[in-house]
Image 1 (spheres, rainbow, N blue to C red):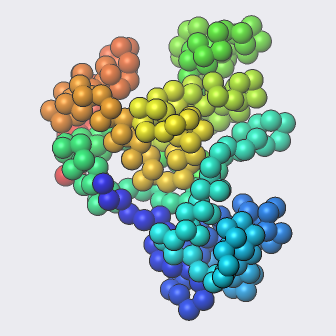
Image 2 (cartoon, rainbow, N blue to C red):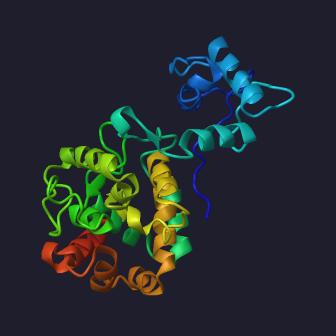
Image 3 (cartoon, rainbow, N blue to C red):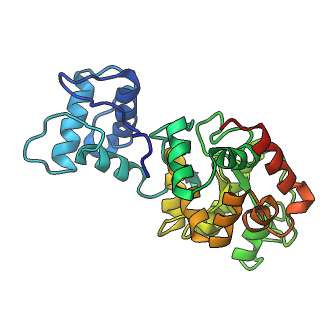
Length: 290
């Protein structure tokens, strides 16, 4: 499957240095300031400070014999920057969650949709229907974080109910109690301080609202790696969606045949009729552009 590159053009001396590409590299470099000793302004301009930060990263972190200060889309330097930045989730203040920065796009292109549809042998409209129903607000919130929904009944299940008594709003045998959209990250943060892995598994993430507990089916070795990918770009979210669908043959057939009831039951759970998930998918499919 061929998705659009996250770094579009090369950054470095005598290179195109498009503003959005330079900002991306600067954002990744800024996460390395504790290791390089260089604070990089995220101004979109390839200046001396940015060049120095790149060469320092290449020498100190990558141990390159010749640091050229160049970051190409598929180069080892860019891959190392992206991997080192988002390789694992970092604990913030008081043990809270600090998510990796986004390194790519927030919107899918027509080519992205087509590549995914070709991989799944389904219609582009079918994929658009899923994201329209799952994340009508978009893949990311106003702070650049993946859109999430925290499931208290799953956190209860993953932690054997040991937090129910003191935190029933985030750990409860009964599903529901979601609260406002803006409250989801507060719930996740509190749960993360109680049990980090269980908290990440108990939230659904991004444009396709894939549950963290399904990280393996989505193609990841750990839930941390899954969440990191959800943070990085919507293209990563789409890759996870394709892997998750292909993992289940019945689900694959359902999206191919637009059997929304079967799709809804597997993708959203047995209670899908409570929120008219199947009919909403049909409506979104009808409204989507090819």
